[in-house]
Length: 225
Image 1 (cartoon, rainbow, N blue to C red):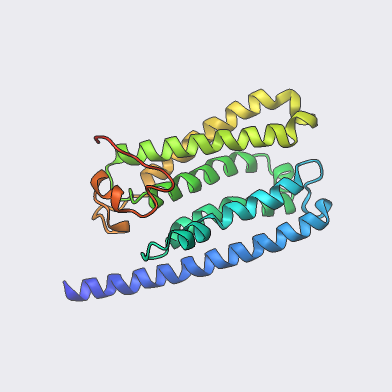
Image 2: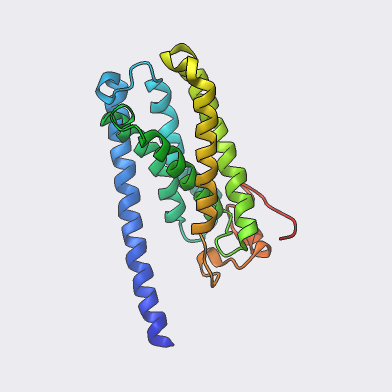
């Protein structure tokens, strides 16, 4: 038993190390991409796609966890996993536009909506200390947060540039499709983010969500399972 715990601790340490490297790398590259796009929107293939708004909102999303963690001074361990999950959507969108994948690969936009909504929903589940909660609770959190964020994203796109672009004629169909894909991503997040033994965030159920330092500041969930 002792050896198994030791091996598990080594594995967890290695995973944490990779998460830290991935998080810091994604944040650094995101800042470089945002800076270049702010100076030259054409470089990032973002002409007419609100490059200025992206240059402001994406760093805000990527640095939300560090800022809140610092302000709360909870004293707990830093949520590297959730931080990565909130950083990747911003970075992937900037990189996808830079490589012109949205226009060159037909299914790339669909993949992004599924994956990024899933990442965001998974981050909320982790931050609320619900990784060890029953599936129903995880679905509640993932769907509520994922669909809300998907809707906010679609509204942001609509008012930022879509209604003034050539995409306006297909905006309704595209938005409904994107929201449906976001729903799929949120469900996948609830299914995949799971700690059977309650080891993640020290949570075995809703009763422990109140102990998660993020649950009160980001999303409070009460009630039965």
